[in-house]
Structure formats: structure tokens, C-alpha cells
Image 1: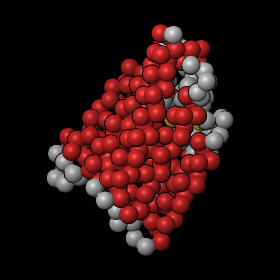
Image 2: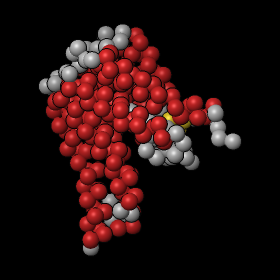
Image 3: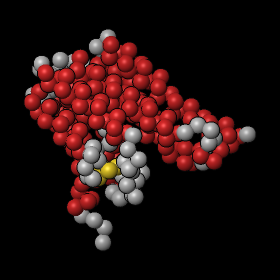
Length: 230
């Protein structure tokens, strides 16, 4: 019974992401972008720790009645894709048709990607861009690039969901974990601080850290493919 309770508690931790998603959506509905992203950062943190905890408590053995992978995917689609896409559209960062086009592309291509049984590679990386639009949209809010640049980035990443380009999982990919894990931790801190400053007059440490860690995490897997292990 103790082992079941411990495993079930991890399911409950994962499920708490749905509450965090609702809090983020309510903040987005009021256009409180900093509050929305703070909730999404908390959800991102929960998503980062629930997997290792699930494996530690042998969740598939002691609480198999609930599909943790499916639960995780449902919440990830809300917090990684749907809510960031909504915020991107409502924020006014896009001009005219570009907002409709990009938001439609984000939610449409991502739902197909999330249902793809081939999304994970043998080394626990992702095959194709893993739909981490929460990271991308947060960078857009923090830096406010021209809408044409944002459109090109959205199109590129949306298409990369369907090409066999590797993207590292910061926790589960063994190769370069010594830098991947600190990178995602620093990204989380930078994201939290950018939201904390309400995306206004953000100290350069946090914006530059956010940009550099985002670029690294997006490109590390492709670099590994170009430099395979002997």
C-alpha cells in the first residue's frame, strides 16, 4: 500500500499541471502576461521533475491504472502549446494575418506531433522539434522581435516537427547532460526573472541568458547528429 501511495502521489504531481495550466489561462485572459508565464514556468518545473520521480518510484509497476505518459502529454499540450499560442495571438506582437497564420500552424502541427509514436529516439532525445512553444513564445515576449522574424521562426520550428532532426531532452538524454541540465536550469531562472520584471526593462543578464540557453537547447541535438559518437 505504501508503494502504491508513493507512486500515485507522483501521478497527482503530474496532474497538478492541469491546475497550473488553468491559472495560466485565467491570467492570459486578463492579459497579465507576466503572471501567465510565471505559472507556465512553475508547470515547466513540475514537468521536469515528475518523470525522474515516476521512474524512481516505479510508477508503471505500482500505479499502472493511470497512464502517466498520456497524462503528461495532455498537460504538455496545454502548457507548451495551446496557452502560449493564445497569448502570442492576443498580445499584439503580430500584425494582421500573421497572427492567425502562426497560431493556427502552432496548434495544428503540434497536436499531430504529440500524437506521433516516433517522437522519441533511442537515446531519449526527441525526433523533430518537440513543440516547446512556451520557451519560444517567452523569448518573443522578452525580446519583441519584428513580426516577420517571429513568423519565420514559427514556420521553421513547425516544419522541424516533421523532420528527423534531433532535439535533446535536458534530463533524459545522456550525452552532454553535464551541460544540458545546467542549461535548462539557468533557462528556467532567466524565464522566471523576465516574467518577474513584467517584460519591461529586463536586466541584460536575464535576456541574454534566455536567448543563449534557448539557442543552445534547440541546436544541441542537431550538433550531436553532426558529430555522432565513435
